[in-house]
Length: 108
Image (spheres, rainbow, N blue to C red):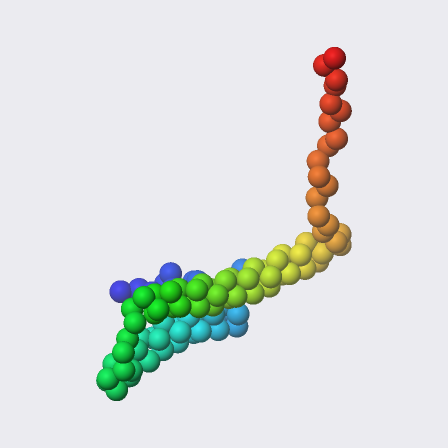
């Protein structure tokens, strides 16, 4: 079984592994398995487990980890793309204009 897709997920636009993506993946992995392990430890100690509470707290934490990793990778990729445009053209990219101004004719 090849995990090519999983390793490609951790690579940036240049094809090398990126710290942001690797840390996000490791953080998500630790969060998922850590929560399950802590629940198992609590169960072994005989403490009460509330499935509703677990289901309300777990997904937002995982979403925060995914959003932080994706946001960091996006920010880095955007910077790399901007640097490549500057390197190749010498022009600094700017935000596009809002578009052409079209006069609105008054039908009356």
